[in-house]
Image (tube, rainbow, N blue to C red; front, side):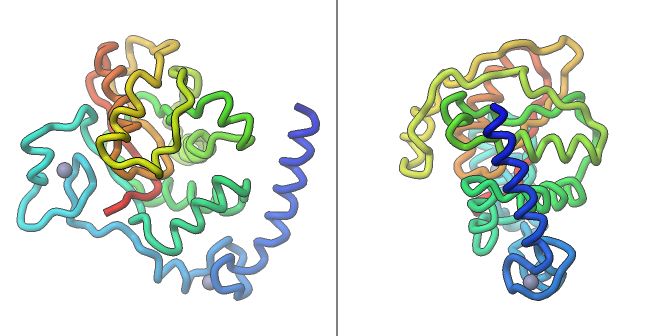
Length: 233
Ligand SMILES: [Zn+2]
Ligand SMILES: [Zn+2]
């Protein structure tokens, strides 16, 4: 544990040192991404379905959500999962680049539309084995930052992942839904948590957050929303 903390602090120090230049264009920048690169980022379009956060044309709610309502209520993402956001998220996630992770979290905290404050934030849990390999849960790190900025409390031990599944990226839609069946377990949720927000880094088909929303709704939670950093469109 001490050894992994030393590695983490060393990486954090290196990340801070490297943050003197923009990660994308190498121009001098106090931020991980300079303002001219930020202007070119693939921000989510404004006309999206409030439930699944996918693009809609000439309607409020998309056809799919109208026909088959999702187990969660509302979702929002800051970016579409395109270049260079895919690269930034991958660096934050797999190379422990905490400067980029904090920058992504800051973008979420400052740009999320928070109309009614939820009772609690729950980051999508990682399986302990995956957590051990990666060193940290990127969704928890995003949630911690959002909590700091918004003062919405965070519960990182409310649920746990009990199955270590095949990474979803290699699977099609149907396989993804099957792959996540029964992977979560509720540890403890308080009766007054009636509006929960799940924090995730990327939403693709939404299978993982759907599964988590199902067990939370079964446990009596009235509203479950999803806030993620990026979404595939
Ligand atoms: Zn730049
Ligand atoms: Zn929809």
